[in-house]
Image 1 (tube, rainbow, N blue to C red):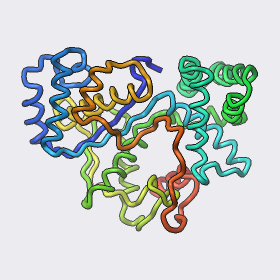
Image 2 (image 1 turned 90 degrees about the vertical axis):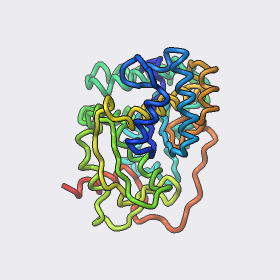
Image 3 (image 1 turned 180 degrees about the horizontal axis):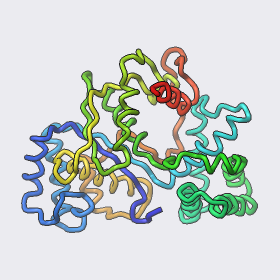
Image 4 (image 1 turned 60 degrees about the horizontal axis):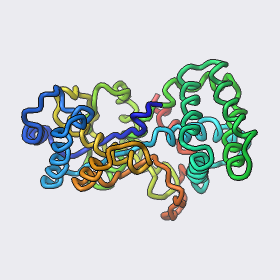
Length: 341
């Protein structure tokens, strides 16, 4: 896990390409760093000043922007729970999605690990887990579970309970671990899906989505086409609360463009980078606090969706009757996607 990049942010906006080009030319006129990218802009005083100006200009133009921010270590812990712990418990006949117990559990476990193990040791566990999934081997499998077991054996109280819940996942058979999808750590599909659902809440029409061609999403257009298929009828996947996924998606077209030539994608990159810096401050990671304050003043103060620690989170109220698809959301989506062939 890269200590310099503890967060991942995906961002989007509703500015058309023509106005995007005008905005880039106006705010970043004379920029000598090649392609306009946040990672380059933040390296200089002038670049940071221009990013703040850029944020104010977005507000002046009435541009809608949305971002999804992820604490990578926390997100990795959710994978430990969803992929290993939940699977074992499901095989025991326990539905941990009922009542959103997954979210309650992961928030509690992560907060406990940070408080009692510290960030460095917590992230060391998450690094071993990522290595275990990226390089499937007995050695990496044992390194993660034995490392977790060592801390479990030495712990007591709330930490022992938290680590004990995670260690349930060690019961998943080795061959099941070896057969997990190769991209199960990849967040690109679910992040874009979450952003599209958030846009649908605000927009009455259908969406035309333009995405960076350099990401892992290219080639997955078919998945979104299935979820946007009108023949699905009106479905709600989830629990009838604000995190539900209404189908079909209102996507007319999903295309992939080159960020070097597509101005709208450059704008999305700068928005994502700005929110990323703000998110670092939020999770207590190293950042330039003076620069972050400028970004907050420039309008990068709120992330619409996130995968961040929130120990105060409680299940939202139910809206109406239970969805006919209520239950394990991963099984729901898998069934819908597989029905498409």
